[in-house]
Image (tube, rainbow over the protein chains, first blue to last red):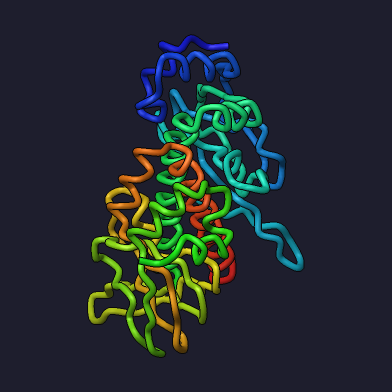
Length: 151
Length: 151
C-alpha cells in the first residue's frame, strides 16, 4: 500500500475526503519500470489504474494489417496524469499499450477494488469518473488533431 | 419540461432514482430539427446535453487550413445515444458540430442545471459521468479506427 499523503499530492485525487484517500491507499502500490518496459498491453484486462508519478509513458496501439502488425503512437502521459483508464470503461479491456519512455514511477491501483469503492461512495465515484472523462476527452482531442493532420 | 417516464425509456438514464429523473425532467425539453439543421457548432459553449430519441445525427468538426476550412466527419449518433457531451468536460466547449441527418428528435437538458444536480446528488453524478465516459471512449475508439485507416 501507499500512504494517503502520497495520493494527496496529485490533482487526480483532488476533492477526495481523508477517508476516501485512505481507502484507495489500501489498494494502491508504487511501481517502478526501466526504460522500454511494457507496463501493460492493449487487449489485456485493465487490472490496474495508474497515475504516473515520474517520467514519461508512451501509449501505443497495434494495427493488424494483412501482412504485419504495425505500431501506432497514441500519445504521451506526463507525471500526474492517469493511464490504464480502460479500467473505468466497460468492458475494462485496455485499448492501448503503455511503454516506459525512460525510467518511470507510478501509483498502481487495483481497478476492481477501486470500482468497488466507487460503488460504496458515490462521491468518490463521481470525482474519479470526472477525472477519467477529462483524460478520455484529452486523448480524443489528440486523436482528432492526428486525424486532421493525416487527411 | 418532459416527463420522467419519457426519460426512463432510454438506457442513458438507467439506474437513476425517481427523484433524480424528476429533477432532470424539470430542466429538459424535447427538440425537433429538420434534415440538415445544425443542432450546435464546434467552439460554442455546450449549453445543452442531448439524448437523441429518433433519427441520426452526424458529428463533424472543422479543420482550419491556410487556404480554407475543411469539414471532417467524426461519427454518427443513433437513437438513444447522447451528444453534446462536452457539456460534462471542462471547459464545456463543444469539440464537434452536430448536424441532423434526416429529421431528428432529441431530449435537450440544460447542462449547467444538470451539473448542478450532479453536485447535489453524487449518485446522479456518478451514474451520468459513467455514461459520458462510455460515450467518450466510443468516440475515441472510432477516431483510432479512422487513424489506423489513414496511416
